[in-house]
Image 1 (cartoon, rainbow, N blue to C red):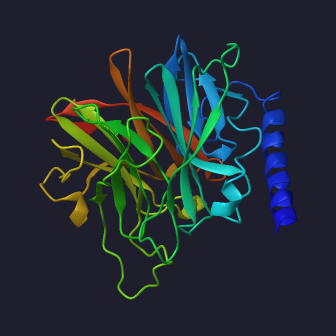
Image 2: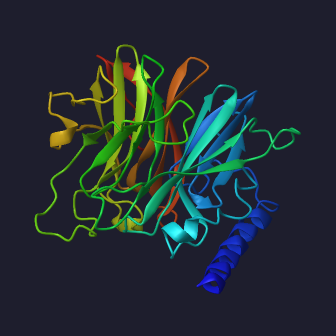
Length: 334
């Protein structure tokens, strides 16, 4: 068993190494191949983190052209194979926050379509790889889901602080919906006594096995505070299917971080509600899994879409948000 784990970790490390070597020949890209993007700004540089071997990083100075950098992990965490024996070093859906002079990067380890999953955390004092203090330090598992024990999936994390500066982690996909749990002040573990809530849900067929992801297709929560409201963005339907991808982005809002979140007509996200923000068209098979940040006084959403004019590859999409009657709007896809 140990030799098998070492072999799998070697294969994963080789995949990460290939990604590192590819950066030496990468050039500036308008729409880099990206899944599940999140962004932080340090100085005059934007750092984009996304799904990929070791967590892929792109940098930009204008939010338009991007250049690939070395990944976060040169060698994925050893605990990953204990969580998901099929794991190959491809780390999903990171989430980046800056708190107490430290960058907190949550990430997902999983096997596709299964809830053999865990959300991990790694930290750094800087995002600039040329800084002498640049070093990602893994903090281990924050939350783990186990098939036939949990009706939720520990992937797609997003950290949010409420009005009392209490940290909460939103996460999840499929199964019984999207969850939120209170964290300790150190942001490394679930607070005691535990406080959990479901923040979004869609109908799931009855009598499915608990280990089955089911057909309640939703994932990727991202909570953004604007004015008096917390806005929960989430993705409906299916990603990762090329031309058959049906991803779309919806939103609801609440004056409490734990909800209930309501859409524009007052329907709870916990009861299948969701106000459509953007969806695919003839040029994009589906768009979704977004994040929202404020840079230089403007709100932006970052997401990926499947490019119908380029082999359905997942590409980065950046759009400025305007707020109309308290609801986020973006220009439709070209």
